[in-house]
Image 1 (tube, helix red, strand yellow):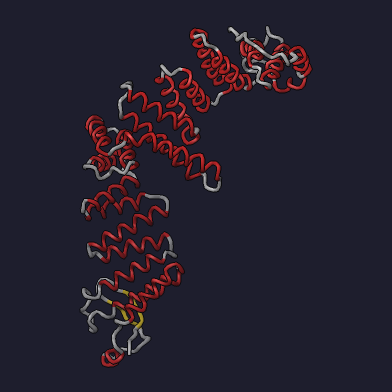
Image 2 (cartoon, rainbow, N blue to C red):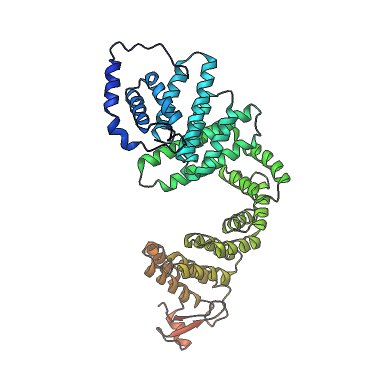
Length: 453
């Protein structure tokens, strides 16, 4: 491999450096194992140690051109002896690329740099991580062949998942945009790349709590992704692109997930009915708690409350995380309340209490349902006022299990206690304060007789 010959190190005593390196062989021998590439029978291990030590001494003081011949010998003859060969090698070869002005030599050096990454994977694994680093150098040193870098970024992300580096996901989106702008790939691939990059970023942000440096890094990645995507992400453009994709692949679950994820992430769910149709189709092909929940929310937006109740009930059944179940059940209770299906709303609230008996808001909700029933439950002998006893019971229960609702509960206790039957009415009907009473109607619940003077 040609070397850069223009050295000007007058103050350097190169023979002395060599002597120091040779004296260091013993200290590094523990780092070098017998080569497993098939060369160990013909290559003296001591020679490997000697050349490794020589190149590393030059490498430490950044005399990369002097390190190069020794590094190259180790690379060719002892390829599995140390991972440092490849870590250091990228710096050594990159320095040669940066220094040379010869286009032909530069091209050969870039090929060598790419080979260094391949050899590292062959002998030391970590394919996903190494491909990310290889992709960055391919992007920088092969600007006329961004397709290669783009594919490498994509493969790295596929292998690394949430372990992908922030730079890799950022450059992945950047190269996708450049290729789409040059008509090398479809514009929809921009948004596919964005979705993958943003998903990884959000996952890392959520897991970086407590690590300020890590959180700041991923928040910066998120800001960069948003800056990159913004000029390309109008809702009308997205819908136009994905309408075609939906028409061609309406039975493909992965395509449907991609469409719904992109439109949701870019807040384009109300642009036409594509999001609704894609989500509905996805739910039919692969029912899940999340697709049921989304369909419930969409049905509410479209004022399809009966459908919304069906979907939210499915979501509550399918969710396995208690917080998610509670979220769906509250919405289900709200839908039934709007439809004046108070009994079904109470059933949803009771399911919440089965999940979390200390959920004071669920008791507050049941109390509100009872209070709202006064006019429709007026067939008792006190004009429906007995329902307020049951309602107030729930408010007391709410604040007893959940201090966070105490103020609201006290306000409602004061509000609805004013509607209790008068003490005189109780007397004429032969009811004794403190006695037991069963509230009828749909409530059908035991309570305590109380009056106001």
